[in-house]
Image 1 (spheres, rainbow, N blue to C red):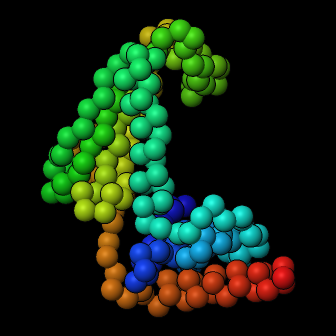
Image 2: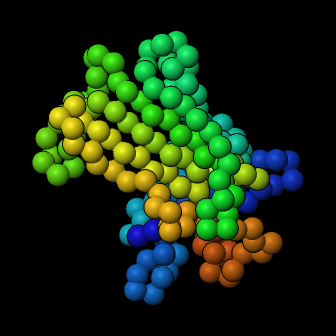
Length: 204
């Protein structure tokens, strides 16, 4: 099932967020997670598509805290390690047009120093020493939304796995602005809000 995300940006700059899937065979909207403006979060069993659990808030919902932008915090940690000489490699950023879409590309190529990390070989399912890691992160120029993430890992034994964006491929994620929601998504959003509010009332 492919994951989708709705971000409703409010006038005060905060937001409401709905993670959902389309369930087969009828492509029914199945809610996975709802975050209200104050950060209150409800999660579901996606097969039931009903809000059943309340997750403690980590702060108000804000577009700049959505995972596509928050992931930059992890990149900042790597950049600081580069600058401190803890990691040998390079860090690059550029703007690229991919299948007609302009994207900000954040790339880093890490050659690990001892002690090197351990990772699982996806073919043998055995843990091996990781020697090199390359990552490409693609972001929308206007909103910062994540448009795609690719990586390649090289083990100390010389084996490489993972993938990078092929020249003929489009970016995997698409960002759309919707002035109004389609009825099925609006109903799913309203249903999730009602279920979460009901849980909160029972908790009081």
